[in-house]
Length: 149
Image (cartoon, rainbow, N blue to C red; front, side, top):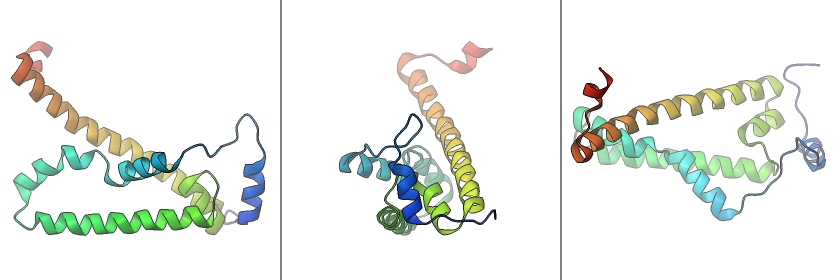
């Protein structure tokens, strides 16, 4: 068996139709999918770190940069919607990669997504911790730098 072996969409649908203890089910509705998609494409980082980075490193062209990034994100969202209509089963990017490029590429995509989500969560946690520390210092009058020592 080749590491680049693919399965047809019909095979993937047949495997997904088998219900069992470990099978994936399609349970999200349109509103859930839209909000999850917007959250995944935009993310929380835009609200946490963008203002600080723009204030320190950007000029007035930040608006153009944001529009360009928004356009690129919209294209990524359209690609995912095209994939979802082509391979209408649960599994997201892993399943799309498996159906089109093979098992090895799907394995790489799966691990890449795990690393991407972990790194994104860590980045957002750093930003939110700065905001939380500032909030507690300004409104509750607790300075964690003094409390930790």
